[in-house]
Length: 198
Image 1 (cartoon, rainbow, N blue to C red):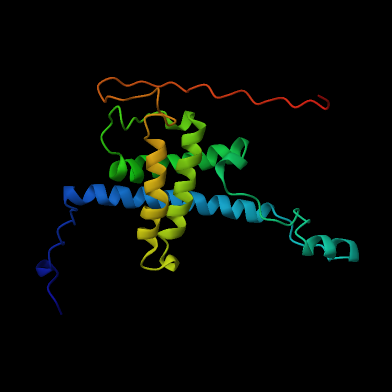
Image 2 (image 1 turned 60 degrees about the horizontal axis):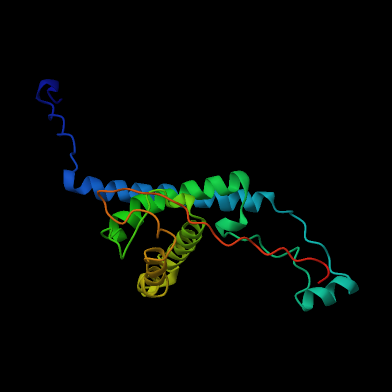
């Protein structure tokens, strides 16, 4: 029999070094954003009709020429969403922008590279950042292969940064100096109203 008084002492609690906490926080934020995105996709899949209509003579010809758009998948682009779906997508995008994109790619603010902390109020910035995020999700997936991240940087990130941070881009009237925060959405041209006759 073993003596209970000579039991092995409790192991010391595991402590994560402070330097690794930022990496863990970034990984957690990325995982949470991916879980939200998967939830949105599952919600979309759950709302789609289960049965597919059988083609008839009239619809098979239209489908062959691409005329039948009812069966096409809904767009995942944020500007095509509305209401609650837009809000959920914007929240997930915000997590990615704030916890991954800006800490890594948020270069110094200057007159030649403006930025706006209220980027979510600039429709063009939301559109460009969302497209960048969608490409990031696809090209950083293991199925994208080893060159996926390089492709994302070259084909997506570099181009998006050129347009977002341009002196005449969506943040042209916003912060150009970190010591003087500013936010203003520039006016856009009014859409032309087309009349039936000239």
